[in-house]
Image (cartoon, rainbow over all chains, first blue to last red; front, top):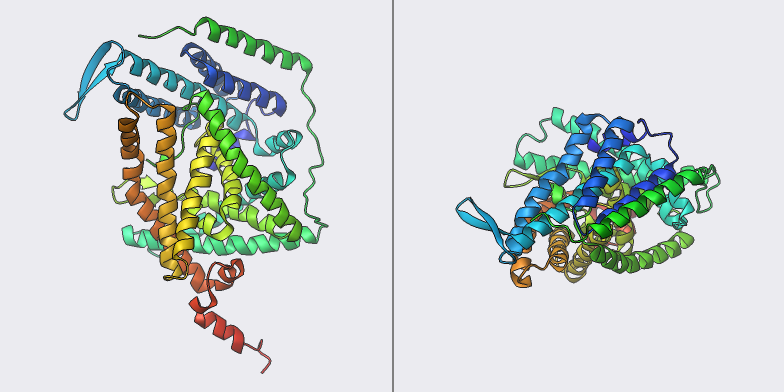
Length: 262
Length: 239
C-alpha cells in the first residue's frame, strides 16, 4: 500500500539525520511563501528547490516520487481548463480549442489564474512531499509536543499512527482470506466482501481498543502518555540561513508581483 | 475522482486558507474541550477513540468499485458522526486528514482548514441530522445508510461551495453549477455506494457484536431481540 512506502522512505532517506525542527521550519515557511505569491515565479523556484532536495539529497527513488509529484501536474492541467471556463470573456482572447464538440476559448485572465494556481499547487505539493518523505511521523510528534498541541490530541494521534499499520496488516490478511474463498469476483460479491471486511475490522478494532486500555492500565496509565526524550534545537546559524532565504524569496515576490505569462 | 476527494495543497488563495482554518478551528477546539471532559470521566475512551480514528483512516483508503468503472474511497464520516457525535468526529477527522496529507499525499496542509470543514464538520453534521430524524422510525440499517449517503454527498456539496467562494468566476451562479456538476453530480453514485457499504457493515456488526452498538447507545434493545433474550436466559453455564 502507498502509505507504507512513504512511511518507509521517511525512516530511510539521505536527510533522515537532519534536525527535524529544521526540516519543519524550512518546509512550512516555503509552503506559506508559495501560497502567498502572486506570480508563478516564486512557486516554481520553490518547486525546483524542493524537487532537487528530495531527489538528489534525500535520494528518494524516482519510482515512488514521480507518481506523487505527477498528481498536481495532471490536476493542474485540468485546473487551467477549468479557470478558462469560469473566467471566460475577461481580457484578450488567446486561443480556442475544441474538445468533444465543445469549443473552449482561453482568455488572458483565466489562463493566468490557472497558471498561478497550477504553480502554487506544484510548489505546495513539493514542500509537503519533502516534509513527508524526509521526516518520520514519530519525530513530528516531538515537534508538535513542543508547539503545545493539547496532550489529548497528541496521545490519540500517536496511538492512531501505531494502529493504522496494525489494522492495515489485519485488513490485508482478511482480504487475502476472502480472495481465496472467491470474494471480490464480481461487483456484488465485492460489496459483500468489503462489507464483511469493514465490519470485522471494526469489531477487531474495538476489541483492540479495549485491550489497549488494559495494557496501558497495567503499566500505570493515568490518562496521559509520556514522551520522555527530547529533540535538540537546531544550530541558530541554520535558522538564520533559512530566514535569510525566506526574506530573499519575499523580496522576489514583491519584485515580480506584476509578472504575467500572457 | 477519488483522488481529488480533498482540495489539493496550494489550490486555495491565502485569505481563504485562513478563513477556513479559523472556522474549522472553532469547532475543533470545541470538540477538544468535549473530548477532554470525556477523557477525565472515562479514561478508557482515549485508546478507543484512537483506534476508531485508525479505523476511519483505513476505511477511507479502501477502494470501492463504482458503477462507472472508476474507483472511489468511502469517507466514513457519516458512521463516525452517528457513533461518536459531530464534535468528536471533527477532531478525529482533523487527525485523519493530517495523516492523509503526510502519509498518502492526499489533501494538504494549507487546505486542511477547508477540508476539515467539508469532511469533518458539514458532512458529519448532515449525517447526524438525518440519523436524528430517522432514528426509531425505521430499521437502523436503513437509517445509517441514508445518513452515510447524506454525509458523503454534503461533503462534496460543501467542497464545491468552498471552491466557488475562492474562485467566483465571472458569474458566481454559473461557477457554482460548474463545480456542483463536477463534484456533487458525479458523487451521487459514489455516495450511494458508500451508503450500501455502511449498511452492510452495520448489519454485520449488529449480527456479530450488538453489544458494541448497545453500549454506544445507537440502537434500541428491541432491534436485536435474539441477543437480549439470550442475555436474560443465560446463566453463565451454571446449570
